[in-house]
Length: 116
Length: 115
Image: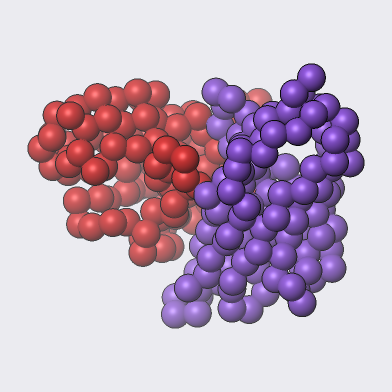
């Protein structure tokens, strides 16, 4: 079945450092890919998405490119801030072959801690 | 406007009791999803609805779990004869469109603890 694998955390960086959080996926067909963020004490919220190969999603200085050849959707930010400290989840939305319905699959999450 | 709301926010129950968790989606949103999230893990899909129709319930762990959305708005996830392994955060999400890879808006979750 479909799956998402993301790098284990925690990731600890100094403010203004470059961030990469790796995400790879396994899916049949052409899934849509997402990054969600969960700030402390809050629910999940969409950070960015890409719906087809080579699309780049971007938001709040974060970006990720849908790479079908490497089945990856790595999250990057050029200069992190303390306020970026959160848990980041990679997810895919894939169509189920048997039922034809869509299902979201989430990774286990990567905790980011940014130090001032 | 109002986001997705869930109630109760916290539920502590004894093993063997039934619980009902409520989700109130954003008004007008067609799709509604239920997830279970264990500590340190990502959300795990349980089931979802388009309007009042349950589209996929393949993620429900067993027949003690059921969900309904009778009028295409509020949804209830019911767990019968709860067990300690049911303890988790239960999250609800809604999205405006049914067919497209639309943004899901998550509620704050219900933390269920089964003693």
